[in-house]
Image 1 (cartoon, one colour):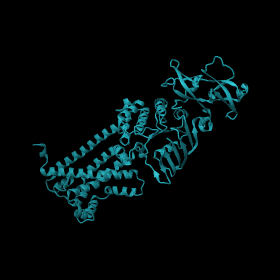
Image 2 (cartoon, one colour):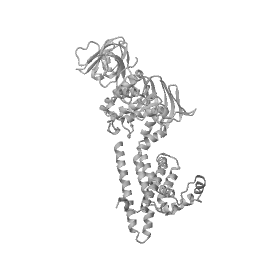
Image 3 (cartoon, rainbow over the protein chains, first blue to last red):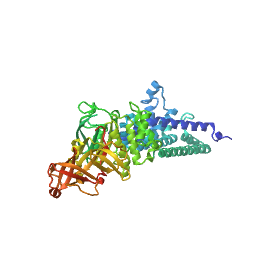
Image 4 (spheres, rainbow over the protein chains, first blue to last red):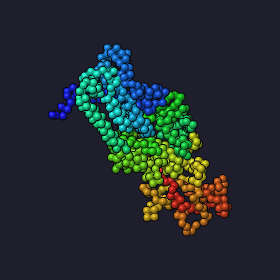
Length: 232
Length: 369
């Protein structure tokens, strides 16, 4: 019995899909999260509070509500979704990209917060030193601000990844529970539990969930330590 | 290069009204903490934006409120050395030094890099992380980093202020060398007289309470006690120009020629015979004698002629202004002593100065005098 036989083909599909959905979610939300965190950490605009509230909304809203709102806005007949479908051929609803989007939105506040905190901890005077050395504000951002905020970026990535991997409510509402398309780990576990005698199948996926989550935490901790050692 | 500043900057409750112009290469800004010296440098560098006025560096208008000109900091080509080194913690020393070159129009070549590294003695530090540097080392790296960004002007904002006394002595010679040997225009800030005199021997501007209250030649500055701060009257004196004649390493002394008379000062390392130096002589450290004083512990006995006697010195003293072979020397003595000596203009006197009184004093190599 090889290691692959621990899970059947269907279950491997679930694991692969979940990783793809979560990875896509964090990859696309990272640039936006950096910008938003930077805005929240540095701007004195009065829009700051509004943006702050919007970013945190998915954290306090019932996930089903978030999923429903996504469906209204980005569904095939939604306000934006219809336009995206006819003009760009991009579909979110009932599609794996929809699961990724739901994961990204639910993970977004968790990604923004640590990045924002680490940006706020940066010594601004080092940045002004960089500008006297000839770096434009974009170059200061890329060469000083972002590298110094790296531990926070990493923490945000891991939290958002874990959140996207575990996302249930918004996903099932917006993207549904389609095997091979939107059935991620939590949805699959839920489905197994619904059928009599499915607990054994569910248990294997539960173990996978625990292993993947723990693994992500440990990797991020190791990388964070290494960064701190380099910078301390 | 000349600078011309005329601006108003408000920061919270503090208002800085700055009007300052100089054509000298090295300009020192002197004044108490919080007077606005650093803010003047920040405006020069483009890190602070005045409400009104104009800032001209050389022939370049970098700020003009009326015409809406404000050249951003990264385009001003101004090397800034701050009070704290402000090195990049995520780069090692070599990359910190190279950073400015990434953006410079004339990227410093390997030779220039080696030259700066050698001048600042930071070769052994190149591979180190910033966190592993001492305060003095970090500040030297910061100076190198500024120099290697191909600056058109260098600003030094009390670069020694965050260092303890021994670290100061570790860094000061490098800055003095920079000030004397490079051709870079330098504006530098200090609230300590010895630092100021060692680095800026030509032009000093005094900043007090958000205003430039004096701007002019260093010799004029030294003769005006009110400018030297609360305890400043103790430091009033003159700068004597002299040449290094010889070194007496065994006794820890250097012998200066001034110009025909001998002046013994504590050893000046690194100054070859023939090098020009200035020595700050405080008026209150000078003893006057009518006749040859015989055997005393004081090593210096300069012969001069009384030019003028000023009765308005503080603390019941008088200032006797002497001519020492064409150079001015001031002696501050009590009224009682002045009466006992019965000095008159034209009288010949001996000016006696302990070498150790010159220990903490400023001395420096003069460029092009």
